[in-house]
Length: 430
Image (cartoon, rainbow, N blue to C red):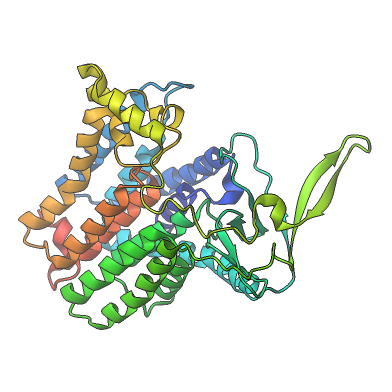
């Protein structure tokens, strides 16, 4: 059983797409999926899912099949059905094993943030350091974003501000593609465990979320801390909310320093290149200014709110709303938001990409556990707080059928079921 729980946790980690997987994520998915299937076959007799769990597995599997049948503008349909073994194995687990799987994932995520946090402190101190420019592999679409870092941590040149001392404050990315990934996942993991800040992984996630300067983290964590302070009668959480409120204030203010140097004096970027004349790879050293990191830099885009919504996406939504009934039901194309919407990530991409059927199906899948808790008399305020935070995160991260998002949600629901004396078996009764 331990092998199955760890393979589920590893697959959830793969779905976060760390930078060393860019361009090769399918290979990592294949390896973890193979481990998952082998582990599942070895312990399938130990699983005893209820009728509700079996129905949920079937509904989720059919949803992934539906997504896999939708056509794309560019290329073949996305093979979402490869995630069926993951969802079936995960949703068939008992509450105890599901929370153990989440614990494994939570530790992997928290530990993955530590190298970046240590490097962040070094950069803020303005100590001499040489970082590598990250050359993206073929197929890794990241626009014109410039990444550089060291093994175990990367940073984005456009998400930084230079201090008067010469140090640099970056938004923490860890090993992930953007600070928002750190902020959102950290906030949801904290919410799923009811903000247990005294745990090492909870403290790491809280600090990392603050260092990411993610508006999503600031909003979700502040509301979550205040909500759980009321729901769980834990007034100390309201004090912790002050730190996240401060982080949010820094984000909204768009802080810069007028007396900052032209560029970071102690930061050197090593850029790999090739020398055709000599037929070998060479390295050149450059200043951060070459990558738009100078005294005019900001921690984030000046578009604080709705920063993920591009004008092209609004045009696509208008086109979808005025389309034929068939398009309304099934969407424009499963990659419409990428091809026509300038890769905007917002909740109504579910409508444009997967249609009204896909949207309603997704809502029902994530509503069923809540309805089950309500009918079983287990729907307390902590469940409402967690589900509200998860719904808010859906606004700008709507692809919630990825392994990490599925694990966090259902683990959070099961955790909620354990919040009362009889709750340990709430989702396994009936």
